[in-house]
Amino acid sequence: MGLSLGLRQDVGLSLRNREPPPQRPGTLHAPPHIPKHHTPARGPNARTAFVRGVRAPPAGKDLAVLLRPHVPVLPRDTEPRCSGELAKAPVGWTPVSMPQLQEKHMQMGTGIIYKIDFPFNAELLQKMGPSWLTKAFHTAGSMPKDNKVKTLKNIKEYIGGGNCSKLVFDVEYEQPAPDLHTELFAKIPFPLAGNTLSDRMASSVMQSGAEIGEINAQRLLESRLPFSIPRYYFGDVSNDTSNWILITERIPFGKQDGDRKMDPAYDKMKDRGRCPAPDWELKGTVDEYYFLLTTYGARMAGMDKAEKLAPRAVMDGFFPSAAMRPKEHWGMRAESSGIGEKEFAMKIKMGVDFVGTTGKALFPAECSTASFLQKYKKILAISNAYTAEMAWWCNRNPDYIAWSHGNLNVDNVFFWRDASDKLDLGVLDWGGARTDSLGWKLWWWLYCCEYDFLNANLDALLDCFIKEYQERTASSGKPELPLVHFGMATEASAFVTVKPASGGPLLERKELRWQFTLSALQQGIGLLGAVPQIYKMCKKPEFASIKDRLDPRISQNIDGKNTLRIYIGTWAAFKWFRSGGVTSPGRKRAPSNMIFGGVGAFPHPNAIPLF
Image (tube, rainbow, N blue to C red; front, side, top):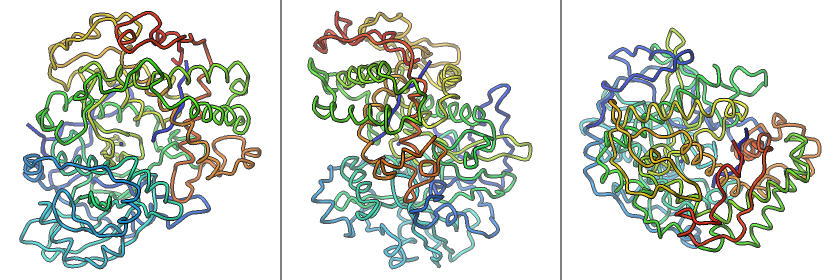
């Protein structure tokens, strides 16, 4: 069994009524007891900032966890604030152009949410100071009107993770406020310069407006999600300049927080769990962490499906939804719906060279054989030709579409244990939160774990998701869709909502697994374009002396970012992408024939034996 490879181009519950963490018999534990006087620490992603590589800016993780006693912050009912925000009209967004970014990236701009100016780097935050913080917190409803920010200090800016720059800073309030955080964290745009030039162009132009989804998840749903998230203080984005800011509480990673011991901040592709490798990080077993993560993710999706986060129309107004996209808008056509023939030919050539020659030491010997490389080229060529069709197929059945986190990896989660060593979690980094295919999401939640673990546990993880999603979801009705699709006959139960006693659609593992698989294939196509970036971060001649992924030239963060390790780690999926054959699609048929199972449509899934 094997995985594909890839690249990625992210009536409510109050805090006191949160549901207990899930249990997986034999692995997970009962939830820790949290006293009424204690709020769970919920914080930002300073965890991604630990820089171990040589070409590194300031070490963000070190900055984010200051060496002084940590004082737990008391709970605060955020439901009134969230309800008020949900009652507002959603904001619109016009895509930002490259000339617009280049002209205005250093200019101050008015936010589209709260209609006030805001800082977008450390210098501006220092200049605008406590008076701006007071205005921002009052405007966002995160601080009582009768209090003020008196002091701003210890501002530090750093590069961390792969999506933006970060700030950490401390504040003092005019009145004692045991339910307000004094240790804060902010996400801001990358500078449009130096090692983050291409990152800023990608985030502000190619992914223009993506920050709105992250800000919305924090400001709208903090009180309603079934787990802790960072306490929200302010967030906004300027459509004119593309600058943005999101301010939350700061997690006390690695510290004692009341009766809970916080895990350290984790990073992607370093999660073997009690592994002898010096830098692989998880403090418990891998299955303990990933089954808990999957269960909470399913609970979140199920609550959305049951409209327990907000009414469907409200969620669809604030977040992108694949369910709202007409079939004819997916781009399906008789010719290839992927990248152009010349571009694909160039990229697949680079990919084959990397797997079969330059980076061959990273993969089993079989992966550099002519037969494997031919199979690899053929499968990705087929997948590229059916790019739009795959995307539509994964999003065609409403039962398998829900809102949830877009990238629920361990670096986007904070973990803790109680005095009995029981594990629980909260969730960070909501970029990419949207309503779409659950199998698609599961791939993006799990693609960074070790692939030997994923191969051995994929069915169990899918079953875990299915069970929790069903238990948390109300019936979504019976969709009117064909029973024969995508070149394969389907059991009627795949399209008919089953309403068990606990409510909600009961998903089928086979369907969910195929959505997961097709998502992996599409990421595999995207990864081809990462080869030049790989060689930029680790020069091509260096691979001659690299023996595995644990080599510091790959495993360490480069320029404060984990990008290279993620690229290489995801390529390592080739290790299991080795068995079976693939059926050529021959001439691609018209979308209508493909959709309704016409002869010559996309090959039967069994013809692409990834799993």
